[in-house]
Amino acid sequence: MTMQRSGWESILDELERRRSAAQAMGGQARLARHHASGKLDARQRLQHLFDSGTFVELGAFVGGMAGEGESPIAADALVAGFGQIEGRPALAGAEDFTVLGGSIGDGGADKRYRLTQLAAQEKVPLVFLLEGAGHRLTNTHAGRRPNDLQGLADLSGQVPMVCLVLGASAGHSALTAPLSDFVVMTEAACLFAGGPPLVQAATGESVTKEQLGGPQVHVDVSGVAHNLVADDEAAIALARRYLSYFPLNAWERAPRREGLDTGERRLDDILNLVNPDARRPYRMRKVLELLVDEGSLLEIQPRFGASVVVALARLGGRSVGIVANDPSVMAGTIDADGADKATHFMDVAGAFHLPLIFLADNPGVMCGAQAERSGALRHAARMFVAQRRLRGPKLHVTLRKAFGFGSSIMAMNPFDGQTLSLAFPAVTLGALPAASGAPSAKLDDATRARIEAEQAGGSFHVADTLGYDDVIDPRELRNALLKGLALSEGRRGQACGPVQATGITP
Image (cartoon, rainbow, N blue to C red):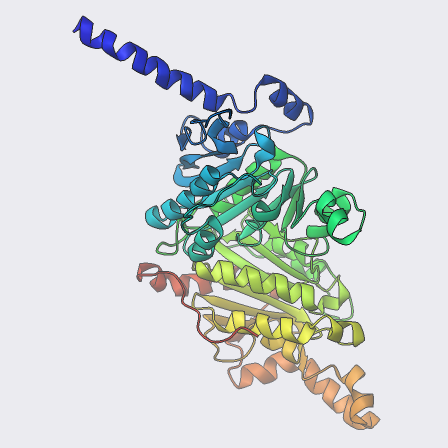
């Protein structure tokens, strides 16, 4: 036995040496500089992402076999593996900026694709943490098999995918973000197809990395990223929270969470928030905070397309998606950015069978020369198609006003698969507001007054033909929606799977 054990000593010593080399990342000096910038390193990021002690690394020895005249590349600049997030399995890969700037080598590319394969095979969420320079110029790509971007495209709608951008991310690496369901940037993050030196060489344009692809570009203007947070810890905490609303995969239902605020209650304060006069603005976010289970509201893309609010929340302990108009921004008018945001959100929520709640209070789709140039009509049409394709529970409430196509894309059309369709009593409806539409229609004062009166009584007119299932006291909004969700409980026992969309998206 002693001789047999001694025969293993050198082998196990070599194993430990190679493992230590991989875990050393870029070395103490580079790690110290990285930490001095206020960032966690790649391994620390994964330790924060996964429940304590659950992370298991995959591919640690990739990059460890150096060729002649070359040095080993620790984990080939990508730390990857699996673990538990709030007690449920997940996979993740973190680019290691301290090793060759986090660039993607051939081995690292294989690891990325391996993660997408495992996520599809084991049906668990996938998280990428980005801070890297894109493909390494020394790559050979000899006999490459399908790459990680193909893997991400195939994985879409099967498992939740989250991307955290925690530093500068360029080229191939940056493409992970728009292929993910949810993208978070830190204040130190940048995202671009090519960095400032490449832009300077290719176009002559001189820009900083922040001007090119900082949060003020992708969170506020382009909408490529969804939420902005201060630092690594906040981004990772947000990823963990986001995943808590979803099932592990499209073959399951989202888990319930019991708590102190999961039962019925009247919303007495809503009468102080929502004025029955449709010309008086209010902040929809305050209504949502009042409506949902306490502390459960997570708004997605709050800084982009702000006239439309999309959020994850819990109602009666059940995960729901919410699409709502915000009358404090452009009176709730739906523009191209708002429609684009809502479309993506509905696609994600629908893919994982979350009930969708629509709270309508808008004067329609944005009009005007700038709106037409922005493609507002096409974006609105995409939003309409997205809500039409929903196959999960769909609950609609008209709060005050809904005009023209603005009502249709908020799931107000009667008999359109709604589990429940409701309205507040002081609702104004019509093809377009009488006040603004009368001049173009050349209506006289008497006709205009009659149409305004009809529009003002819209909820009862529509309820008379069962366009609404009920007209409710605003204070009963939460209770009515809880009852609607209870009606949809029969679906939870049904088999489910990935949603197969058909047709051409506008």
